[in-house]
Length: 401
Ligand code: 3PG
Ligand code: MG
Image 1 (tube, rainbow, N blue to C red):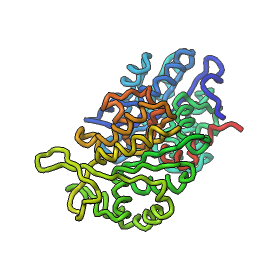
Image 2: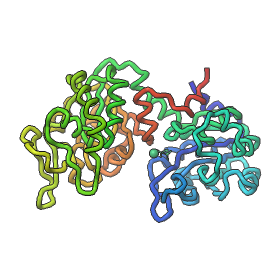
Image 3: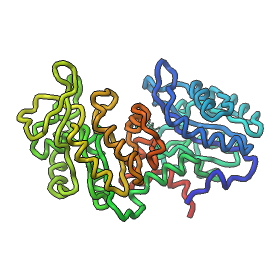
Image 4: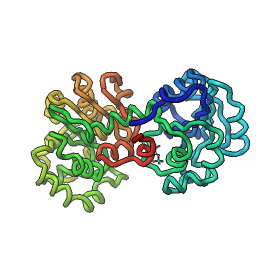
């Protein structure tokens, strides 16, 4: 399918695209799973004696998290156990000088690709390949490695331009993310396939149901999306907490589709039987959904009875895919749903993939062990696209006939 790092000739000059896009505080990148994952690719390339130049992006122009990659270099170096030199240029003269200075096993991180004008416009790969960015850097290298699976849905120069002009390889992260996240679309499972879907976006849940509804035996719903389904099923829930507007707009634009999905796939869809909220003493309280008579309270998690209902479904599955959280797990009081389901998955030896936005953060926050899951994805938008079988433009360019 892909040429990988193991197919590289010895002592190559390698240009590598990573996805180090991270939360930023006071201008400084915060450590997260992406660094740890990409460290393997970086270490393998350095240990093999290649000359390695890394590219990555951070934020978008105009946003607070659009910052230099200087702090990223240190975090990556810590994880990889090799020095990572940083140069504050992406393809200017100082970048070219630093690239030409690389010795075997050296690693260099170039400045944020989105600081160049050529990177961001969504363009055809051929057009990107003709950009000054690609035409300047490509001749300095023998090979291009794409490890940025989680950015592979973007048709940006560093992702789609280089594979047209350099021999292209998939990095370690690219290979593992691709295999696990495509499994639901590509693999046949004999036993039950369960999908736990939550998060904030109803449209994500709708696309997933439409695209792979026939491959999934049971959808267990939670989160904002789950409440919208409950509301479509006739329960008066889906009230925003103060200052948020998550429900009403989504309800307006999606309720007919959700009602139709409930008609068509009702047998496959499990909805919460109880929900949790913050009571007057700021404590977690729960209510069964069938006694809720008025839409006057914001709910922040599925209830414990729901976890008890979902638990055996998960335990009876051959494969479980998680997309989105079942509650506001960042607040310990409302982590019961998300953590309860993750614990059930961790406890069984089913094939399991956890991804979608921040959901995988719950694993570290609540002391679950990553090794109890088949795959914990570092992708957000790319993960959803993979689940719905949509091709990722930069992945397609790496595939070999
Ligand atoms: C991500 O962090 O989800 C990817 O790196 C893509 O970033 P983007 O959404 O800013 O294009
Ligand atoms: Mg994003």
